[in-house]
Length: 65
Image (cartoon, rainbow, N blue to C red; front, side, top):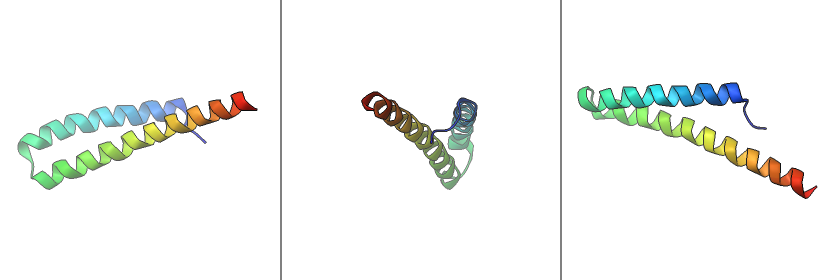
């Protein structure tokens, strides 16, 4: 089951905000802070990618039925 458009948009906005935080953290914080922010960005990005994959699979399944 894929996530709603509203959730996907919110996750994309969170990714944008985390990227801004990462840019600042890379200049001023300890490296482990930047690493953990980057990990969260990757986790959220993978959520979007998996959501897109599920959407494509559902479309394919519908076409072959």
